[in-house]
Image (cartoon, rainbow, N blue to C red; front, side, top):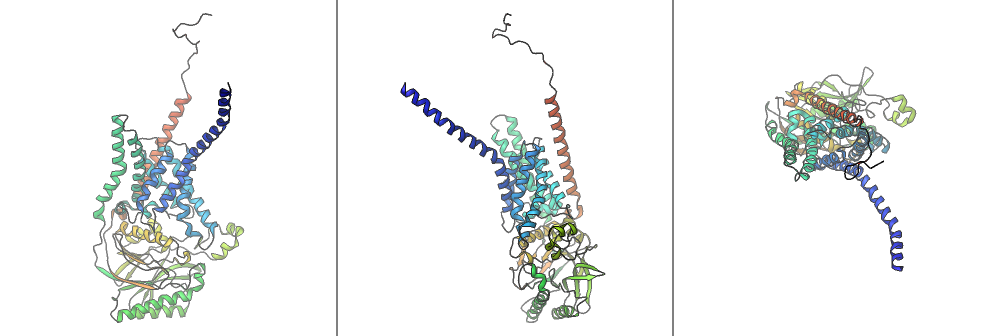
Length: 556
């Protein structure tokens, strides 16, 4: 009897511990999808430059698909937002390098909303046959929206921009960044579905066939498509060659006070150009056909300031060839971020005004509202830049050079317009000095590599403080500088005149994928409505007393 009492007492004491442990385990299990969503977002970030781990995007989307499969819209929204935060918080940390965490966190909070909405869509279509196709299209639809709103959009973080070293890169020449990004996301979601179906493969032969079909469609087809597109990628010259010089003059110091060093920055670029001219005269460097300076290399308006004009003119005469100069000019009361074609004999002969200007950097949306919140913002952007309206293609020593100024490289239309306007090569003059040694410059360099393949053009990237580079039409970097050093790059590069399918099609592939996304979402919504109606309308059955085991009603 004592033993029995003791056993009962021990059971009473251990019961609460077991129950608490079970509750804790249950809570942790409920948190698993949220943790997986956030960590898969971080994994996606790690796949982006400066790292060359492009393939990590596939397991990132595989895990994201796993946590969303079969979820309701609320769970899809929350898990999608966590995925977006895991991805964008580290990716865009450079936006707060000089201005503090406030703008960085605000930007990420807004951009992650687009990812959250994509999560809702992915969760909705995850019950459909071949759901990875619909889900990947929905992701690209989210990117398309993010590239356009708010404030003209912010395409930074497109999946395509993390694939400059990947096997899918040739697809950029087929349909631009939408098709390249779609292939990567499809492969990731397809990997998720293939693994899921493979785990069920023992059950029926039909399931095994479904697993094989999904694996083929979602995993093999993008890879095979990329291999098939390889002939579109070439670095052969079609319109001759040109010897180009990219000048990086450097800046006295990094940070927002870069703009207070305007004369020093101009002097640095003129000095590096004169140094290059001396090397050419000494036979130590090839004579370039033209020279490319970066954005903001002359923030002193050379049209209004005779001293700045003289500095540029002397540099052009020393090298003896045309220079594309990045200037800040004021014309007719408008402030313009301008590229100026400077002839050594005639001076300025052509200009290109930046068309896609940066919100909160080159102009301030909602100025009165933001000024009421924080005067510092209005003082940093005291005057809004105006937008250019025409593509910029300079004819430099017989070569047609398309200008895509810095931030514009992230926008599909801004790059394509220069190629369709006749550019035989592209230059992306940039100023990254305000972002110090952050990953921003490497992310932007990767964009230029994607653009090189997308339009089959040599791309040069002259930057004030680095990394400047020369990129072949097949996306290879053949020369690059360090950061915060004065340097110049000289190379003979191929000129090309043909147009890739991506150049010819323009926005058509993106529209097609958005329509696929809309079709999948419509199908999912309709199927969900039918399921709810089926659950809500049950046939009426009259209840009768329970029968005895023998099937005979009990006597009353």
